[in-house]
Length: 254
Image 1 (cartoon, rainbow, N blue to C red):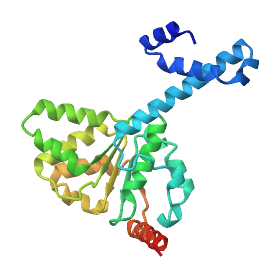
Image 2 (tube, one colour):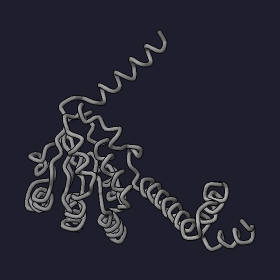
Image 3 (cartoon, one colour):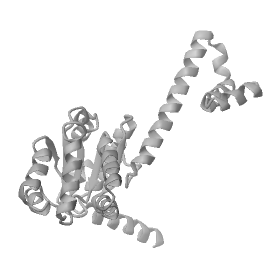
Image 4 (cartoon, helix red, strand yellow):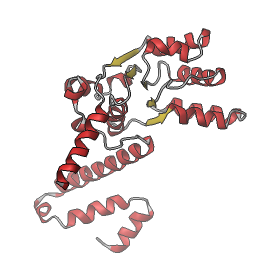
């Protein structure tokens, strides 16, 4: 490629186009294509390159605990679920329906990893996703509890994600001010964007852990009536996998 053209493309923020052209110049098989075929090949590669960059950026910004999580790495048998169910979930139909997902189970049941599989797939389908632990979310709220403008800005940011994963949901009881913040967040997302709730506590315990009363009623009403519960195993998968890793290390040293 002419260096001046490459420079101009870079200045126009088309450096990826320049890279694709240079890569294709090295592929001698493309010399047999006619103009339209060559142009189509060039544009397809450029589209793929930009889609991959977008997905990588979405996954990075989602801040998933397990960013490399995927359907192929999910041990469905150990979880007592079918791969077809996961494939159906990752088709993202729940997003267009704004249906919440609820993943509950004991410590080590693989709840967080499962939520990250869904979150990573949402990113691969170009959906803005956010993973956040509830203690971190409420920590941010508490730090800015006297700054109404920052509270509103933060709540709006969380509200606008197409998929929001709240891990460690209600693992700790919350106070009245935190409950009000949660209500405003859930109210903003209700009917618009789905939320994935990941918790050690079953939904029957949520009302009390939300502080009880009418505000807890309102939060539960906006979550439960349009939600799908994903079954989890009673097995401690963390213990199972860690034991396998330890055995592999011991065997390698024997």
